[in-house]
Length: 264
Image 1: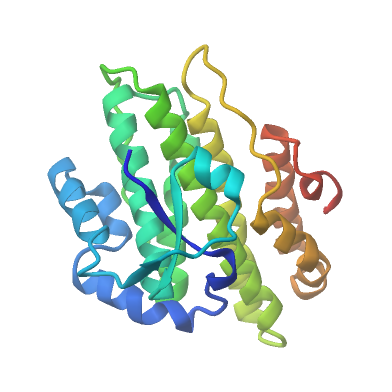
Image 2: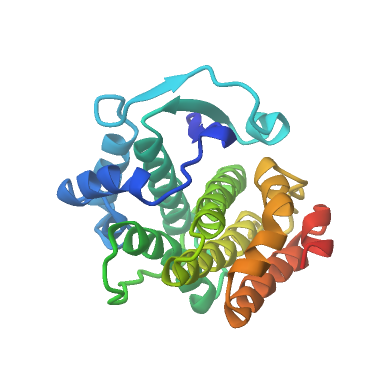
């Protein structure tokens, strides 16, 4: 698989206003979350466009990400148009997962598949303040190929970019101050992205008898560890409990990260 663009952790956007221009542009071009339910031909074309430097301004050469994981999963840290890179990376990661699932099939349940696919719609709804009207979910067929390396790459890349989405949403909680509606919206989005990230890891491991290596602590975990008390203080109790439950569920998949054991 070709190198996968991912923002340097310090460049992850903090406010939804910083994503609104890019999100509106993607909607106008038909490159928003709806591409995930489009035809395979449309999806392949969308991926080419999203990866093009003519559409998204990006700059290579930003070192200092999570070097161990970046090297293992072919991640290249970049800067440039933060909103454009952030959203295009999410969509590209999803399109790669969908292509792999179409070719190889998956044992992931339909409910888990729906949970994973909900996150980008929730993100675009949040950024553009769209009413939540549901989504169309296309489940994977049986598949005829065996592509375990590509599956691990695609699943872990999706996990890494979804954890950046969690960071974006949690930053919104921390910065919302007295805006209770925004706090609830942000913590709900963070929870949806955590749940999707858990399924992404399960997808990466869905390769039959060949186990997938565990994810250890990444920069986004460290950030969550720093602000978890702020999230607890800002969010309504029921919302925080849902967020904490999503963190614990992620811990059930991989327990290498101390945040997920102690933080909630």
